[in-house]
Image (cartoon, rainbow, N blue to C red; front, side, top):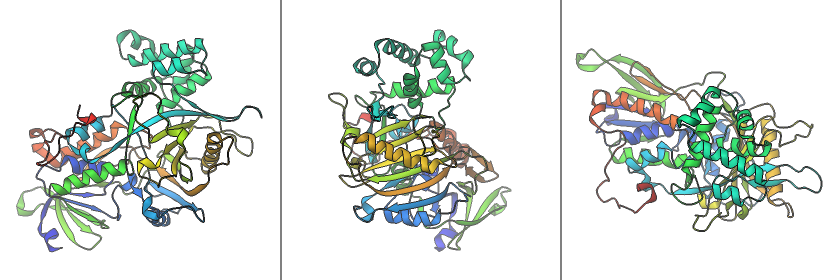
Amino acid sequence: MESLSDTKWDVVISGTGLPQALLALALSRSGKSILHVDPNDYYGGSEAALSLQEADEWVERYASEVADGAFAGAQVNKAEDGLSFPRAYSLALAPQLIHARSELLSQLVSSKAFRQIEFLAVGSFFIYRPSTDSATPAMLNRIPSTREDVFANKTIPTRSKRSLMKFLKFVLDFESEPHAQLWKPKAKDDLAAFLESEFKLDHDLRSYVLTLTLSLDGRVTVADGLTLINRHLTSMGVFGTGFAAVYPKWGGLSEIAQVGCRAAAVGGAVYMLGTGISEARVVPAAQGSGGEEIEVKLTNDVVVKSRILVQDWANLAAGCTSQCRLTAVVESSMPAMFETIAEGTPTPCVSIVAFPPGSLTRSDGTVSDHPVYASVHSSDTGECPSGQSIVYLSTISGPTSKDLLELALSSFLRALSPDQDQPKCLYRLSYEQRGGTGAFDVDKVTGLFSPHPPHLAFDDALLIPVRKAWDMVMGDSAGDVEYMQFEDREGAVDDDDAFAA
């Protein structure tokens, strides 16, 4: 431990969440002296993936309904039998799909980190349609997102297909001058109203389009909506036929966080899990340089000095976006959710189900105000044993959100198996998750990451504060190297990988 105090660190990074892990990756070949600590015994921070035993310990920590950080109100319920051993599970706290056109994937390729990550195909998007009468059961309708999909769909009337095709053609080139003249004057208007007035899309088709935005509250502007839908459509087929997004095996973003930290460790960074920061104060720099440095006291009472400290905000401001989550382990492989849609298409391991506003009716007769999303994962993700699946449900937090997620889960399972017994739910983990502004703020020699607002798909805006943190650490030398541009290390295998194309 004496060597920690004796070393003059260029940067101390606290927390191994995705922003800090990507910063560690970016600095991994900088030659900087890096001390990376985390008060948790696991990597990933708010993006961690937990075994059942780790989840039990995590629930004890975040059981309080009063949130002073990212999580609150954690509860767990288990069946008496049916679960496998604890480490057979890897439950993602914040699962997100990654679109093929995401800048994150480009950076993982240019930094060569992608070689250590196995990416899986995200399959179809579905809409939940509730039962309208005793003769019509609830259904899961697959959303068409390509020209071939639209024409092959037998539930959409011919006239509606023409309207939908007109919109899909428009959104693929929405930034061109002729198309921009139509939507820019209405950029801040509601997308749903725009779809109805300009493209004559009916209620069902508007639900399809809005689902592709993955908007948590169901309300999205024309400008934001067109950008999000364009991202989805232009990502289709980039890495293979029939899918627009990928998901990292073994726990999603947690796996990327571990790879970033591993790269920094190979580059000489020192890692200490189970060790946080108890105190930090700015002091005059040694040797009379006239500058400042930061003195950091770790939770193991070791005191170190560093040129810069990068860490999370200690507390989130009131009014931050809050999301209610329910993670369910289900005793079924759910083969209908992971079917290939065309020859040559990889078998998907993740599917998305949307419950539009108004599609879920509570016991008191009121209907859901916001959409509910379910990210359904097969055992091929490595997150549960064979023969089981994981359903990650989420919606905007409110007084009845937890009950709404339970209703969505049971409604999904009934719609999945209308003529069979409903699959057994072996495990439920529920909690609230709060986001922040997503900013990176600097206070003298300390950089502070604010958690990003919660999303269902990775938002490339998260990469901006990581780059700002890198600039802060690199200082005047930032202009001498290319950001996230690395050559393969000696001995690396040059695979013929789709991401390298």
